Image (cartoon, rainbow, N blue to C red; front, side, top):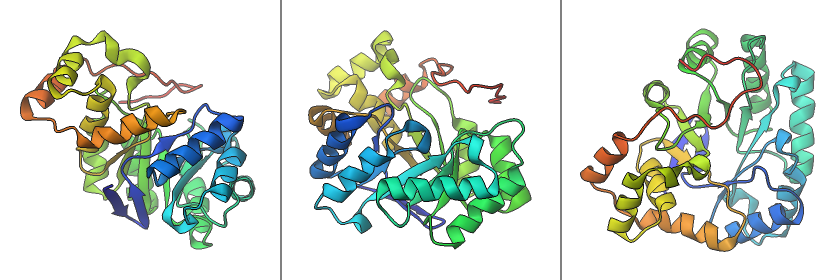
Length: 272
C-alpha cells in the first residue's frame, strides 16, 4: 500500500470510510477491514460512530501505531475551548491518546479562520494530533490557510470522483505539499449511468467501482476512503489496486461529465 507523507502525515492511500455506519455494523466493518490489510480508518465527531471505531481499535490485534486514524471537528465547535473539548471527547471515544489526522469538517461563511487554524495548530503542538488539515476547502480557503495564516495543512478532504472536477484544488494542494483525500470516491451509484466506465471495466475484467477507485489512487498525492460495510466489498476495493489503467482509459474518463456534486453543505458555498 502506497502512503502519502507530508507535514507530519503518513497516510495509506486507500482507507475505509465509515459514514454513515453505526453500532455493530461499524465496529465489524472496521475489524474486517483491518484484518484484510487496511491501515487507514476515517471517522468524524459528526458521524456519531467514533465509539464504535474505538471498540474496533481496542479489539484488533493490529498495533495502534500501525493504523492511521482520521477524525474531524464540526464547525459548531470551532471556538478554541470547544475544539479542544471536541478532540478530547473524540480521543476518549476512539480509545487512543492521539489521532493521526485532525480535520476541520466544513468551513462556514462566519468562521474566524485565523483563530480556528491557530487552535488547530495548538492541538497538534500539544501532541493530540500527528497532523492537521481541512475538509471541503476551496482553493481560496486553502490559500488563506496556507499563505495568510501559515498553518501546516497536511490534507484537504473533499468530494472527488470521476464525475467531479477537482483540478484547481489538486493543483494548489500539490504546489504546497498538501494531500487530497477523496470522499464519495465511487460517486454513490452515479457510475452506472455512464457506459464509458462500464466499457473500461469490461476491458480489464474489473468493476466500475474498481476503475473509478484506481483512477483516483493512480494520482500523486490523492487518497480515497470508500465506505464498505461488508468484507467482500472491502476486498473488492482492495483489488482495485491490481487494475492497470492505460492512456485510452484515462482519456475516456476525462471525457465524462465533471459537474456531479453529490454532497452539499447546509449553507451557501462558493466552490469556484
